[in-house]
Length: 259
Image (cartoon, rainbow, N blue to C red; front, side, top):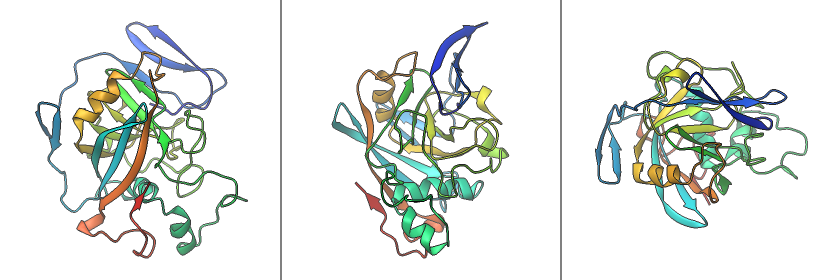
């Protein structure tokens, strides 16, 4: 899946549905097939996965549909496998990029703190949802798949595709991109196993709780990816940092919740 950087067309070839692009940009491919639920146990409207590592971070996004809060999705971040990618998501969930950047001597874009949107996932759209495939979000600048940026700069390289970082199952949290080494802030959560994305998109986490919310989001999707109604991330929260600590951003003194 690649976050769109330009207008896209949906076409099919040999049973493969693919988002094609005009003028270049981020490409996201989808195709059918039965998804297998791994690393998880399911009940009616519920999904509780077994953490890969109890010392990994856990973050929460609260989801809204048509302006109404419908629940939250808790995700485990794979700090033990792709710590840089996990940190990017965690800092953006915490909404403390400016604080983190100043403490790490990062230089933001000119006038960033003036007119540019805040670097946070809170109060942003889930701009693309395809039933049987995935929900995509994280474009906090344009909210349509053409923007966003990482805490390290506009983009950063693929960190690893080894082990669990290279396997897409139902409930996988993965980076959207525009090709090799073009990770920004956009991400997607899969509705089923998507093995054709393995080795192309960095998997940096998994859903621990909230499959009922995923089902509600999936119902709002269309084959083109356009949502039937506005779907959004209302707020974000870091429930646990690496090694179980609640202190993890910048010099470990930053607030953890945004709304």
